[in-house]
Length: 374
Image 1 (spheres, helix red, strand yellow):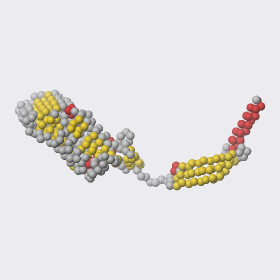
Image 2 (cartoon, rainbow, N blue to C red):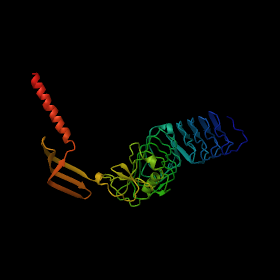
Image 3 (spheres, rainbow, N blue to C red):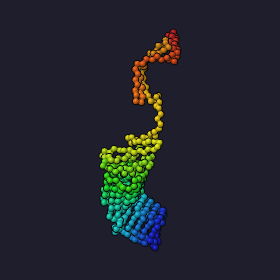
Image 4 (cartoon, rainbow, N blue to C red):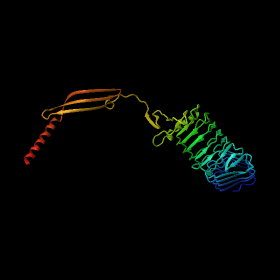
């Protein structure tokens, strides 16, 4: 693709979704607008000397983009410039650039305090170096199944919005005590995220919602025993309460448990379930228990509310029409009471007495016939 020599600016979405493989932004172009090449098929990008500004989302969702080379004159790269570029393997910056640098093909600010962008194909495990204080917006955005573990240094104080969005692969994240600000959607839609541990006693500032939105496998949010402010935990509760069904697995278990104010070495889990007007949900040993909402009381059914155990001995005579039955033990268990009755003799008329006599008579006749035949 050839960009005209007289062009000084590429406008917003100018080449949105264009079908190209190689792109060179010439020196006559000073700035490139937002999403100018988003969703294109470009694989290799070279930014020549003279270009100063790459605005936000300029190459966002370029699924085939593999390599980017940035000249020394680039002064500003907007947020999420390389978001969701899942095939991105390297970002190289001219060593004379005063605003940006690359360390092992990973993009940083020149003073190495801002972590700008991680190429998704770089590797499964990454440790952000000491000295970084800010993880920029969308720094790992869209690295689905391509990043499994990110270790944050104790120098980080702020994590930008959507920094780890769509990082399907990260299961556990530890946020150092130095972090004081978590922006909107930091862990948005991290489908494999199971636990988050915050080591600080400060309350991370930022959005009160959507930090953990759509983290459907999130199981535990941990804070240390001396943690005083529960706003961080409320962020997780908000996500849970907003869409309860997303946080309940096939075994009807409560997937999200908060560990607020408990020791990390001896944690006591506090399971959270939400309630509605018709259903009360409680968590007992991790199980989500559903109960019907309170309704007007109904008198107990005596048949269903009592349990009777009886042992009895009976004596019967074939010549009489009555059988004397002696009930030795009877226990009745009712709500809050137990009644025992012992040795109560009763005479019970058997409605089948005639049937008994006829049966005995037939047996005697059969015995006589057998004896005579023999």
